[in-house]
Amino acid sequence: MHTANGILPAESTITGSRQENEIVAVKLLQPSGTGTFVAELEAMFNAIHVNLVRLLAFCSDNDDRHTGEKFRALVYEYMPNNSLHHYIFGTTEEVFFKIIKKWLPSYLSLAYDLSAQNSELRAMLDWPLRLKIVDGIVEGIRYLHVGSNTPIIHRDLKPSNILLGRDWTPKISDFGLARGYTAPECWQLGRVEPESDVYSFGVILLEMISGKPNGLMQQLLPHVSTPIPYRVLDQRQSTQLY
Image (cartoon, rainbow, N blue to C red):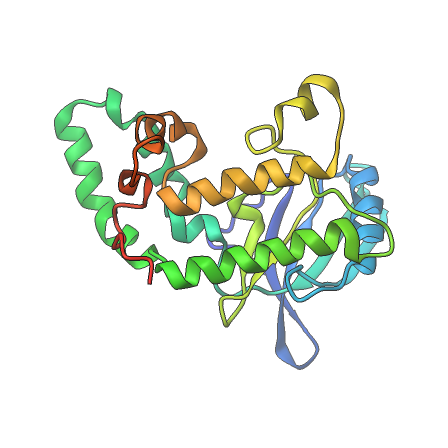
């Protein structure tokens, strides 16, 4: 098993292999995540769909003699094309600089633009492929809500949880809670409904159309009400959708 930088946080995903050199993704859970572990097992083993990442196996070892905690891991099918987040925004560092760029001195902003340009060009998705990904996300959400034996509310839909297979088929992964993408009533009132996933999907859709992280959505408001809101579209792509 390995990671790109060799550093493993408390909860992380690494790659490994099993029989016949099949590459898999292994999610290491935090030691305190007993409830998370059980919940993911129940949900993922019962949820089988082309637009959901498939759970292949799990591991729950005895107490670690050094920490006194259990070792827990989930083994998923490997997604070779990274996540939707990677192709819309680039690296986490690039997203950070996009958000703080307006406060940077002009020479630092220029240096960032030049350094990020090539990676952004490589990461771009054309409109037909984005539409294909949108369709797949919708089908995955539909299955979670009404297609499985037990309806599942994801609660953590975001671009980094939309993984891409070899043929760019989107597959939804992970179950949790991310305030930035979750409907406000979820964390204000403690109420979780299927509509919460629809709200999160709406945020993802805006990000895919605009190429901007949700922290910059306010910049789009002046352009939304225009008769032909081309300025809302990702400026790195042609405004011709077909």
